[in-house]
Amino acid sequence: MMLKVTGVAEANQIKTRFPPLDYLIKPKAIIECYEDIPCNPCSTSCPFQAIHIGVDINQQPKLNVELCTGCGICVHSCPGLAIMVAQSLEDKIRFKIPYEFLPIPKVGEVWNAINRSGKLIGKAIIEKVINTKKQDQTLIIQVLVDKDLLYDFVTIRGLYE
Amino acid sequence: MLNRDLVIIGGGPAGLTAAIIAAEAGQSSLIIDRNRNLGGQLIKQTHMFFGSGQMFAKTRGINIANKLIEEARKSELIEIWNEATVVGLYDDKVVTILKKDKPNNKYLKVQAKAIIVATGASEKVLTFENNDLPGIFGAGAVQTLMNVYGVKPGNNIVMVGSGNIGLIVSYQLMQAGVNVIAVIEAAPTIGGYKVHASKLRRLEIDILPSTTIKKAYGTDHVTSISTIKLDEKWNEIEGTENFYEVDAVCIAVGLTPLSSILSMVGCKMKYIPQLGGLVPIIDYNHMTNIPGIYACGDVVGIEEATSAIVEGYLTGLNVAKYLGKTHPQYDELIEKYNNELRILRSGPFGEKIRAGLLRMEER
Image (cartoon, rainbow over all chains, first blue to last red; front, side, top):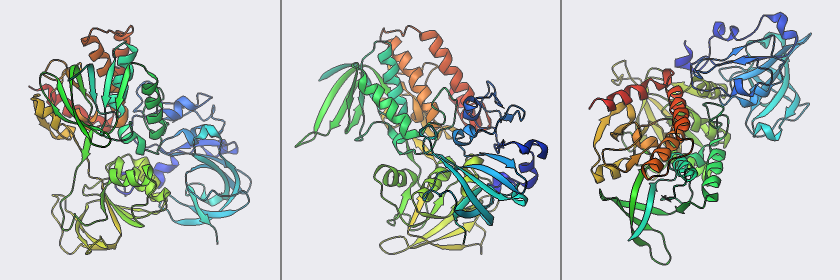
């Protein structure tokens, strides 16, 4: 089923937003903006000019994966909460995701890893909780998840039991 | 009778920016707003705005409101009347106002030289059985309760409408700890931005296209609703009813321009569905067919708040010029804001407004 009917991107659509796996040795932004909407804060907020939109702000953002450092500024700058950062470690994937709910997770806790349809798909170990004034209350949560969740993981919800 | 050069009816995003830029040009104004707070709908918006980085994008609506209100309050040229409702507008530019005043409210008359109508929009309602039961709200009321007064509108809610308002308010309800059971949508596809829809799906909220609300149940308060599927011709499909236990229903099926005051004064009006309903015919400078009476923001066509902000700036520049106060950067600012509007309306989501504006040009 299509994104415009379900609100969930299809698997082949999602994969187009991931760089080749070699690049993910370093953290890289994954930009899930699939629609021409008038919006450009990801591009204007990137300190490395790694995200291009151009004069017509209806264009979808294009990531220059070489320039992206995975800093995560775009993650809290995207009004659609459509960007995360992914990095492939030896036996885990490290994600930085935007988060706007209470309670705020604590470092060391294990939370439910959630997919794009809201279903539980595994565990997410909370590594870092970043909440600077500049983020204006869109927190960035850094988590570790199992390697096979690379294309499925999108957020966290509640403690893992 | 009081005398003022410029009266601005409505202190939302369009009225505020019109006043601010007119003041920059040296033009004084009086903003009349019926609410206790300025800022219109912006004060209920806790989400980050889309749009261009230069025009408040990624800023939360409430913070945009605070910034504009502070700017307006700082200006010695801007006078603000809150809790004052315009009750009449006449073609000799006399405005009649019911103003809150202790112990009794009072009626006032103001003679203006120019008027900007920036009254915004009102919510559309939906016809279904028992739609007047307590607990059935418009999305604006839900946002007012939740984000202005900190009151939960219910605990289990169904959202009717998947436009940006329906999607955003659903997300805000979840943030406030209200369980959104489902978002239903009569059209076969989601109306608003898919990024907003995806945010809800991650929270395991169902979005159900081709579905409408059929009936609400309850005696003194809504306790459940039934929904029904629609075919491609929008006819109900028998046997597809579904029942949900709810204590609140939120209706977000669109907005319509609050243009009655412009009809009253005798402005040339046109019914343009793409713009949300009955709108005044305005020229390139946002002036109606009555010289000196201008209109901007949602009252001339339903759009995003960012467009209202830009239209306010454009209209303020033009009104100031009309009254003999030309902004020192008039030409470049007009070009800049027209360009902003053009870009905001140029994508696929601007298609409706572009079609509506074309219809306005057909005389």
